[in-house]
Length: 312
Image (cartoon, rainbow, N blue to C red; front, top):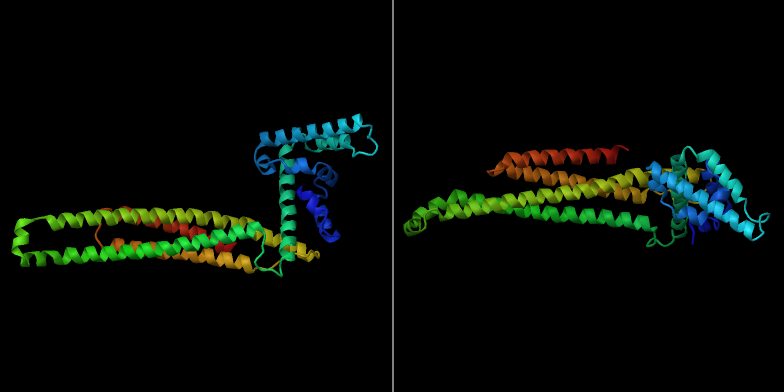
């Protein structure tokens, strides 16, 4: 079923909100009679690419021309929509600016979906386990971030234990070996070799942990962008709808929950970076300077994300 058909089932207040989306921008008659075709196009991509916008525009003209021809063949010109006038209007208004048409339809389709999602959320307010799919997806993403930072904390704690053990062995083994003269004579240099292997293993683990932190940050950055550029914008629009009487959910509870959780993840990443830096400073390492530089760069990225999340 076309999204437009769902909008037609809404009450007059919400239908009027939809009408206002198109007023002065795009004829709702074209939106109505070409609803299935319009919703089948990728207007988001067309809005960012002139060639794609031109292709969609020409295809829409072709579609309207085909509908007009059907009306002629069926001797139904008077009763059918005036597809020829629709086509003429589009050519007059958007022939030289197809990208603008794509932007209008991309924007309107998104807000239509937001209205429908808000209605769905309102209807399910008595059942807290039900929420729009996009909300469930965001909830799942945030939970995944929290789980990953929790696992990384455990791994970095284990890394600290390995460092402490190696440091203890390096500081005490010589005295113990000297007390066992036979061992010192039979296997000279064995302990140094084992310590070197362990140090190399720890260094590799540090690099792996840093890479995992970077991957977590990249995933968190996508979530931050969605929260600020999409979810916060949607909430602001619901506020506007509520001001004109729309029965929409304007609660900030979920948005606050997500933003708080993501902020805690970012602060957790900073804390773990500091722990790795402390380990790097405390225990000697052949690549200490390289690790410190990497940690510093990652920390800058974390601060950038925190700033974006908390200052919008």
